[in-house]
Image (cartoon, rainbow, N blue to C red; front, top):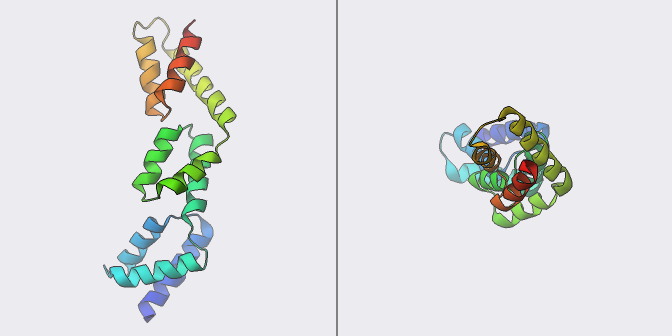
Length: 152
């Protein structure tokens, strides 16, 4: 390992000790630091993975919990964003299992109730509620039944 790789490795250890990163993010940072040397960057990332500084499952679980609890995202949006980061499908499935489904359902209901208040007397209320919830990443089936319940 070259001196430049060791410097990048030390810098990335510091970054990874403060917050979670996925392998793709760390590889990009290493590649940028090594000015495009992909093979050398992959060596650095392999060391970080071996030393458990980087773990896609740990990253995906934290991402899913945070986005669900704090920003109110649904599984569809979380799945899409994690796959865009290069996280594998089976890791995403395991991470999504950690989301408390009861809290997510109550959060969706609260979001839709608040949105419904702002749409009083709107002729397209149902459509706007549906579009709002789908944009947050919830599936059509769960959103449709909840909207039917709220509008009765």
